[in-house]
Length: 94
Image (cartoon, rainbow, N blue to C red; front, top):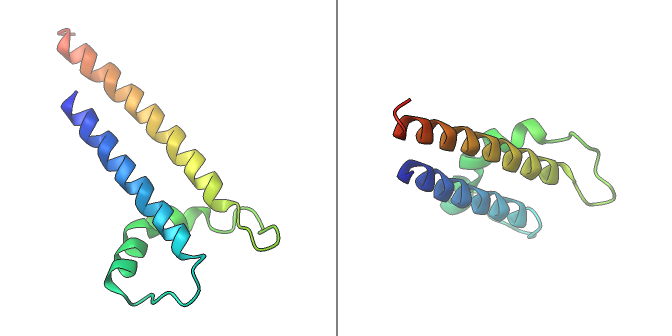
């Protein structure tokens, strides 16, 4: 169960890094060459890219990140349930 708790923590940290990325996109004059900003973009790009442009923006609002967060939450919830079942089966010896 320790493994699952570590995964929960990592997923939560990753989620907050994604939130930071989208908040940065609203700030004018962001220095995209700053090491922290580059780190945030480098770490999150593999998740953001497949969802970019799924929905056309409505005015100035892009709803693709909402879809991405929903899919990530659902996928992690499913993965977590499977891991819990596997851990419990392993602990019960079968």
